[in-house]
Length: 489
Image (tube, rainbow, N blue to C red):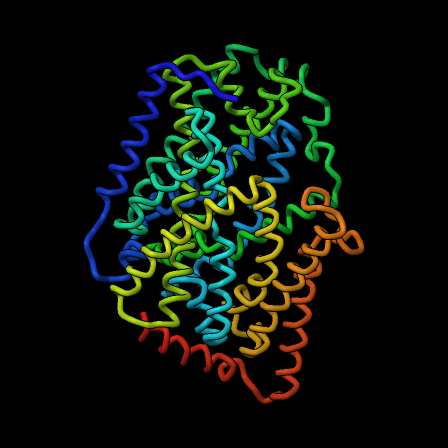
């Protein structure tokens, strides 16, 4: 399947790619300070924080189109509301603490609170959680749709164009390109909605041509299905890009306010994409590939130039997330694993992170070819990794909830391994497409349950063993760890 682009559309796309590369490379600042390369010198103001977080947290645009096409406005409820809820919790209870810690990465916090083994295992889980494979796959599919080139070539081209400027510019290049892509992602859908209205009509057209369930909050999905998506949205609390931007904010107040303002922008953008998905379902019933809902709606409604702007908007939505997760994944591998094991100064941190970008890109392309499904990649990663990270990371910011280092490491390993084994059992009993999980229970439920049980039992045992331990004494270990952490950054 391919689309038709006029010469003017190709010109728009060429200008887009040239602008992204120019902005990315021109934002490079020469510095031997690792905080500059990894966190842009902790200088994010409120507008920059909002624009980079909004664009970063919305990369799955083709998947959003597919879900809207299949389930209507339920996309807003299932794929939006859970994330608004947990992002609000993050803003109110974690964002200020994350910034005030003055650390650099999630494994830094785990080492400060629970020691080096937990930090290394947490770095491993973070590296897996932030694989850019889903976004590499989406950018490859979209480029293949536009150009007609082989998928492997498109995967290579899209990945190279996205991470090239990160190699030299680091996080500041990520921020600068995100600002451009923020405007383009909103601009693309601001273009297609008026044309769809002009071509087909307004709400009356939609209500007359979509299934009735598409206009219900649940879209025909069961409560259990919706509950699972709420659990998957727990990803927000452990997402390294959320933590990274809080670490890079100018102040704790910027981090808190920035997330709350970002939620408003996500709500607006979700409304735009849900409306576009309804138009696609009403105007193009019976699509064999619902994932192509947005591109085919553009084919049916947009003239030259406008179509180029819309495709640039979709590319920007994907690339803004791809560059962030690629950089975070590279940081997890290069700094939090290799540098933590090998050591060295700030120059070594940058060098290992740059090599991490190369390794991350290659692995993401390989995974995209091995598992050519965005939804399955998202589901697998979230289901297996979140139960391992959630409890130890969240409790690390609350002294009264911290357990001993051995308990923390055990909880991480237990949550991760139980979810992984449960997932594997379901795939073996059924298939990856139609798993047959033990007792019919999703893998995240037993993984989180075991992690919480391990944590609670260890926390209770520690307090029974040392009933005289005060809150101040309990925090002594982490304070010593904080001094060690400062000496190694």
